[in-house]
Amino acid sequence: MPADIAQLIDDRPADGVFRVHRDVFRRQDVYAREMDRFFHGGWVFVAHASQVPNPQDYLTTSIGRQPLVVMRGQDGRLRCFHNSCRHKGALVFHQRRGNRRTHVCHYHGWAYGSDGRNLGVKGRAQGDYPAAFDDDSHDLQPVARFAEYRGFLFASLAAEVLPLETHLGDIRRFIDMAVDQSEAGLEIVPGAVTYTYRANWKLQLENSTDAYHFTSTHPSYLRLLDRRSGMAGRTDVEAAIWQAGGKKREEMMGSFGFPNGHALVWTTSPVENHPLYARLPELRARVGDTRAEWMLRTRQCNIFPNLQLASNAALQMRVIRPLAVDLTEITSYCLAPVGEDAEQRRQRLRQYEDFFNPSGLATPDDTVTFEDCQRGFESGEIEWQQGYARGMGRVVRGADAHAAELDIAPDTSISGPFEMSDETVFHALYRNWSRKLK
Image 1: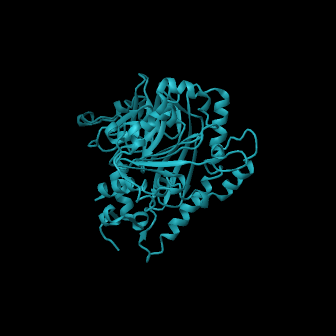
Image 2: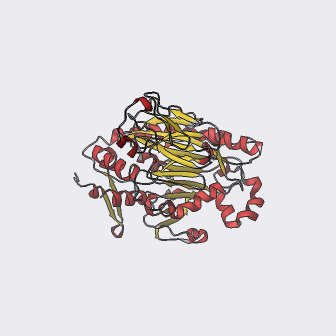
Image 3: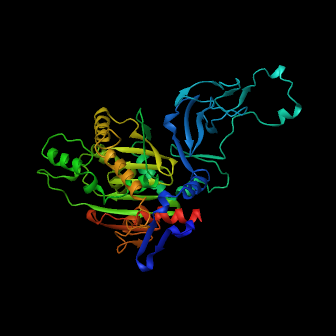
């Protein structure tokens, strides 16, 4: 059994070998280092700007185990602070979100404004504080780094990190595709779903870009699609891949692996049931033929370490929060273009509800399977996973023709028939993981 974390990834592309050791998912010291390097030491998604649209709005969030708050001050500026009173450490913000000019700690009554400034120390005049007390700031502690990319808000607890746009790199192109569905940008549809599963957080990162599992993990959903195949007015998330009579259409798929652990899987499912389909001429005129065509493709986007954008018939945002080596919290949102008409919004919501979340037709299958994997990892004599080899004979180092048409430069590219069910898309995650955890 490898003692060194660096030995837990067996990456030998010249030999056709890429393996991940099961300790990656089950060792407590590995999890502790992940929290230190990735969550407490790098850029982490914390909120979307549409969640705090008005002056004095606030939203509680977190990085790893550390509680944070994102606020829009009276001046309209967004800021991010540690949700901890400077006096004795108590939480200042207890609600998920709200709008208030002043926030008072319940413990000793210290007060803060919507810009994080300390507005008052209770009983200060009677406190006989020494002069040195005023040498320290009493304001809420800001995070070390806070930045926005097109409405997506990221924070870092470490000051020495790459600029956000450098960290994101070319994965930004796929954020742009989501945002540019409307000239007015994206908004979060009111409501969110939070749930947990008893397994490692990286299983969710893998699963969203794993086409290989679909037919074996979701048979009940596929049987439902068969029953719906002749029905008029279908709105389920996979409806567009079926012809009349229930015959599956030919699809292509591909993936890109990017520096810093980001990855994307795409498929060319027919688009007639996509909410954007009716607006395709307007999209072509505004963003060009190539980008418009890509906007209607199915895209599963991982922005390392904790953000996922699932762009299919609906547009889902998942936020991953590791709670323990074998416990993970997921918060899920439906995103939509600002100004979308009522029928397109209705269709989007029905498709979102159909497939995603614990009440949908697919997420329960996935989370149960994650927990099955975590239990199976306890088979200690089995050390290496064999689930990273599909597609290795086809992978391209650098950009392929699909990447070239988007003018992006991934580390790896691959494309082929949907049945290929590429697993090389996982390599970007674990190459970045191995590099940064050494």
